[in-house]
Length: 454
View 1 (cartoon, rainbow, N blue to C red):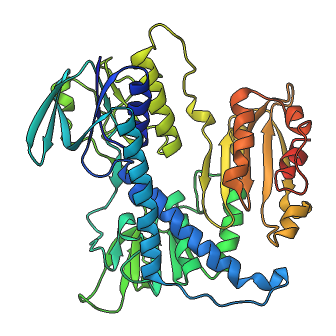
View 2 (cartoon, rainbow, N blue to C red; view 1 turned 45 degrees about the vertical axis):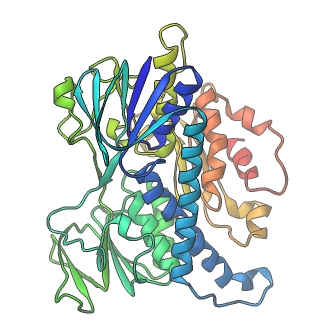
């Protein structure tokens, strides 16, 4: 069987390695970077910079831990080298794994000539592959509206900021979703003044209001200016090389700063893939609809990752890639667990961190669903006090009749790590009592999970 994959991000590389291990002949076509542009050009660099900002923040408050306070200085060039080193190692690791499984890596741009033919345009010309199965995992790119004159210097798209050519004196962040609030936290930690334009009445409009409120309070405490209920409509960059710019909003308010950064979502990379020639359906937003096996309307053509329009998370894309490989190699003879996107955990790497999984309290009440909600502040745990960071809480949502864990939210230090325990409970259908009866190490932050479940 010949399996051709267009796009070497988390979905494509996982599908390639798993399928190859199961005896499938695999060709992977990638035009940018093996490992995925969204991951290695967005996610990983931003988290590396957030880690540096976290180190600066920690060092600035060491007085609370019985140490003399220090005033560290950011070295932007060394930070740039650190980011490049991390992404290079991850890219090389991904390539090595693929090579070890005898996956053919083709550097170029691929498209479907018809339902079973893939044409790859490379530096040496075109190559044609006949495919028994095809995976489309070409990802997405930052959305840039016409009113934003992105130049990569003062008006930035996300991929211009890892790190930027110069540290902004005052950054105006446009967009208060996950990416936007991470940028606010990151640049404020690195020393920039920050203004955040919030189109709704709370940051993170799709998250639990109680969770969003904790983050807003932290932003305000750190001097971040919030423009709520404002939608950006123009960026006036002024004279080229001038000292500042202005972001105009639809209600007449103006946010002035030295730089502006767009964090207003992404659009799928579905153009030029030959979808029409292959008969693959595309929705109005450019996403490729899939079923529970990640199959498109053409059964042997699959889609995964951001292109599929599901949750834009690397973890989800990786799991989709694994399921595609299983379905191609053994799916018709062996049953396997289908993905449940409602049970996918997610995290926001702000300070404090935010993570959630499963059913949210606000959604349960909106649906009129009866749930049991228990909440424990980290301030009641010894480890949080030892860490001199008692911010945040653990909230667990469960079924009052059965005790089954339906969801949870965590705000606080290491929330992204701690949510895994709740995610396991949600996925496996465990009861709150199962968490309570698990013996946990003391003193740890995870003890708050057991207390919230009790």
